[in-house]
Length: 321
Image (cartoon, rainbow, N blue to C red; front, side, top):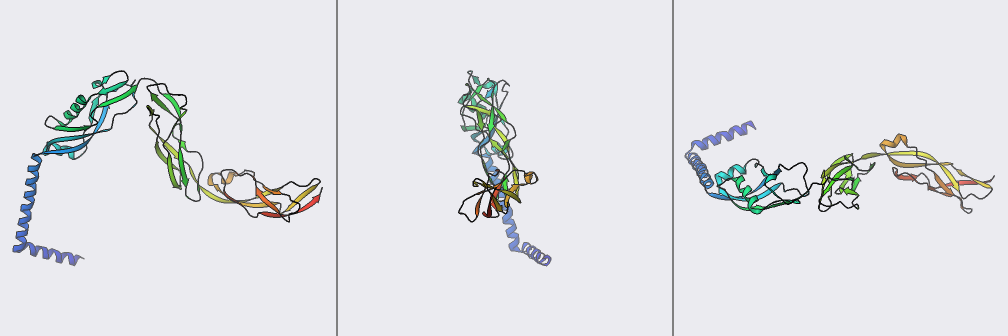
């Protein structure tokens, strides 16, 4: 490898020292100078460029809650000399700060018309700039001074796990309640605030996600989002013997099954493996003409998965009491 690099370097030095190589170097030098010269000239010409300007509303009194927030950015089309626009093209744009005191207030809305708002944007870019387009071109923000109403959060979800895992409990939000703000009275029919659907699949571990809350139309929810925990556990295979209970035995007789217990296999979350005390039975319904009695399971808890009986029937003996 070193030998190959050395040979390549020698060939390049030989080319540079030749007449052809010197001509090529001269051409490249003039090309670089021409590009720089063209770029300087171009920057002195007027150019038009689109910018997404970050915007912030400042100076809002603490007793006012905006129902609709202003946009976080404003799309602006600016025409100015390239040298002036160059400083906005690299790095972060400064924030356009709109003062609360500059709004008109009719008691229900904070309003700033097109002339005033576009003027604020034009001042942001300086007197030499020509602003040809602003979106939005005005602001109208409903607000309230009413205290918010506390509502409970309802987590909406569609989650599933990988095989051998299970969602081991309800999805839990980091906070139980939020405040809902509105210009009008909040209907009593709104009993809770739902999250956007938490849609996850193939989970193998407990997962936390940040989920937005769905604000009713014309209202604002604070906070606007909440952290939701999805508890996930591994499933462990387990076996145990359960008693067989005979039903429908004839009067004056008893039915003895062979065996008297049967083994069940199932999957259970790791957290309850050693505390699995749920009573499970196998039922055998007596039939006079049956050679064997079929087995059915009693109800099992939701924590059990893939429950199976070792056998589906047992032999029996009918005895007089």
